[in-house]
Image 1 (cartoon, one colour):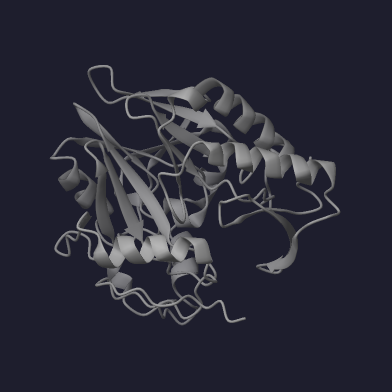
Image 2 (cartoon, rainbow, N blue to C red; image 1 turned 45 degrees about the horizontal axis):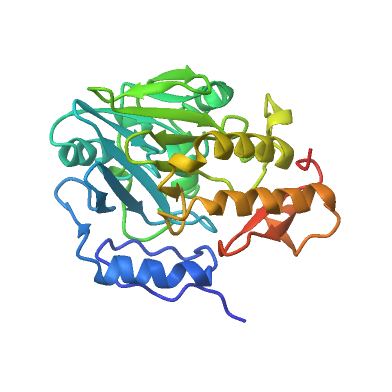
Length: 324
């Protein structure tokens, strides 16, 4: 059956010739949100490559369409506190994401943080003087901080864009920034007691982390649907289904009763917190019988396996090396 994604009308102009396959349970949510929601705000004079949605008085959900083959659309999240704001993830880096975040925050200082080091979450980091990330991904993020890193994903060898709808001049110029390594439990103070806690989750990368808003109960979790082992990974013991399961159990046990919704880096958001328990249940099935996947697939040339996550519309991927 053809799972090439059905089109969703939008004004962004990005056309990905090799998009991620459609995830049916996500599509209707995204169609209604992007085509019919009066929450959508566009600021083409600041950043013409994103859509902004004010989900609650303190939270903006910023949508960036995928511009990489096989890669999904990305959500960044802006939490606006009384004195400053926290931007979680910077997507692919096109346009003036920092300028947009500062505008949405009403001119307040915007602190930047990443859930993890992968290219579709860190592209706009160069727009900031410093970026916070969990200590286990900090060295990897520093390794990627080179002039050619982002262009190698967004342009081919002849310098042509990977997708139509943007040009080289739409990328912010490269500049080095300070990578601030922060531990599990680090608290970002947005003023007057408004606190966001970094929660180390691991699995997808060694330092993959969520950000828990202690005021609204929103939990911004980044990528939690695969355990990957990137080339040259310094902490392979953290890139496993077992490590992810253990840390997710701890987070849910400690914060579950305070959570109002779960906000992944891709797909639908404001999910019921029970979704995290479904992820744990899936991880336990993998740990019990890794040889019994629901799906076998080729993941960018890498053999991978997956078990479906109940009611989530996606799966939990792993390799023979990342079970734990």
